Length: 433
Ligand code: LLP
Image (spheres, rainbow, N blue to C red):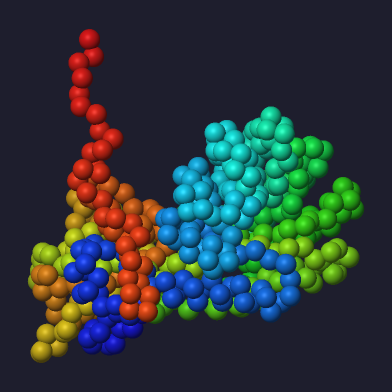
């Protein structure tokens, strides 16, 4: 994406915001797929340099659509899904099931059954309840389910509490310290219908430092050492999750994907060698870092409200229904006008409001832009992860369309919802007598 300081030429994948809006309307999620390609390659190439067996699984919760899953396949990514719905999207996209990893702390029997039938590559098992469902269902189908045990290494990533997951007091995973994980490992090892691939942990999201990964790997290996001695078990796979931070605003200084990969590989190799174990396959699960910076949301500016010496509100034609992150996490975003600045080039500090009936529906608290007017287009950057995927129909707002752009060409990948879509599952009132 190019964005010169005076907002003269704003393009996404080589296409101007105006052209996209003229074709698809606003609000619009627009992805520069070159950015997605580059991010995926950055992770994959870093692993290739390390000469190690690996999988980079795209965490599709960040943005799951048929076209995105197809792009992930083209790029050589595996796929992390967390629900029957994401699994179904993968199936619809023709994604190879042996590269699908199924996550979640409360998978239903129906989801487990479907996933075994489809022959997915791995269940990331979260708790004993799931283990027993998985065991009985794979026996019933006469199959052997590949299992990674998700554990909580007790590492706190320095990130928002809602998106931090590696600490002991978490709803996710088996507790390592209290011995739950080892009991689970024994159960899997003794069960002919399950195959223990190894361990998984995910310490949180939007992480800017490598320390947490090193610490988590240390903790995993202190337990793997014990499992080797007492269970004669060595992990075939170690999965260190996702969480690699991206740039939302200038305050964010993300590390290059290769830095994370090199750090993780080194920590795993060192620990394996130190403890006399074979080096396992290393899997990671980036979501946000694959799609976050690739996506922007284009809005049309509508009403304005000036409270003298307090605030200058500009309202856009979307908001918390297409991007819940500011309201939910106090997330910060950068934005720019897509139109030519006014000739006087006056700068104004605006508060960018959404259109939902909720005072908290503010997309950006304060941003200085060239003076804007109703009808101008506003581009909010880095909305590619957890934007569309967390969108709602609050206030019966229809979900925006999603477009991919690359090399000056563009393609609709999700149609804009219509009013009819909003009521398609509604049934008319009937008399109850
Ligand atoms: N693996 C596991 C097990 C996860 O739980 C997650 C994210 C990921 C991978 C991918 O993390 P990423 O690379 O995208 O940071 N809705 C929140 C983020 C929730 C993340 C949940 N798990 C947000 O908008 O910031």
